[in-house]
Image 1 (cartoon, rainbow, N blue to C red):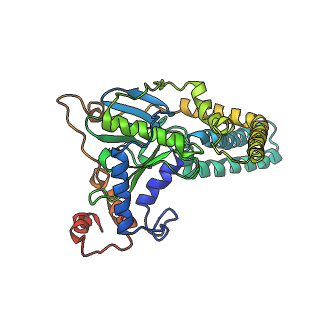
Image 2: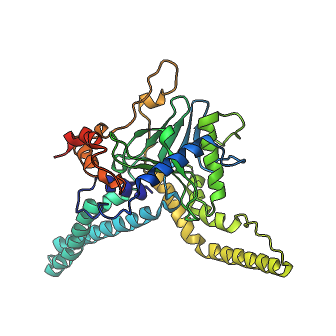
Image 3: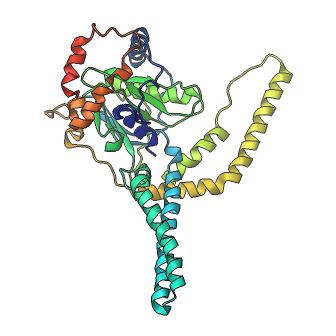
Length: 385
């Protein structure tokens, strides 16, 4: 599901006044906070954050030049939009067929009541068909009739990160590793690692992508970030060999993210909370066992719904195509091959570029001095109306 990525990109290019516009909705940050975040990110890219680096996410390629992984935020929910879309299309098709059969009876018997009765399902099919193709098809394409997955590629030789997204979610982007900010401690919000790139004069948007698997605790996410960090900074030595996953849409790969969330909660490691009081320690263990038992019962109850969601996940992948990198990215890091150019606003079409610069103030610190960066703003003024 690419809903989060779509929302983020549309917020970057939305016209002021649109419901997707972020004008006046963001809390904003100070210049000091921006500086502190940059220092923290630089430190965390250079220093080890964990002693047990490991990847939990699907890895599609791993060698001394690049590592390719699945990206995206809500993979566990993929299939939900597919189920809703199928029911919506089924209703439209059923209404159209019912109208056709009713009109067929009219032509055979010349019964005017059959003609009138056929108008209602025909009107419903036309109205809901128009509604779907105008608004619903865009939502369906978050899962179907689009690229099969979001990809992220880490290239050690070029020290770049490549994002492969649909055009409606930002498209393909080339970003510097040395500017990436990894956020992996999200307070148990069950979101994957978030990679952020602050805005620049020639790239006024805030770029971001989720990578890895979601987890209720920060420790596994820290291990995953450490694997990525150590791969980019130190190389393959000392890292465990990740399991390479096939890109074929195999059915069990569709059920993994759906059931993985519940199983992760059910079988997750208990936090190491030692108590000096033996009675209190036994009480904590009892509560933990009771919680796991109740969760197991809940998993059994909702397993039919999860089974349907898993089947829909697989169907959505079958109705998508495998994304393919441009040649310059496929050859990046090879001897004698050019280094891909970093993505800027000018790489998009003129209208998108104009909107990106119009929304550039979304990421300007609250205590920003406009006179101090007049030259930076002037560099993008040619794109403004």
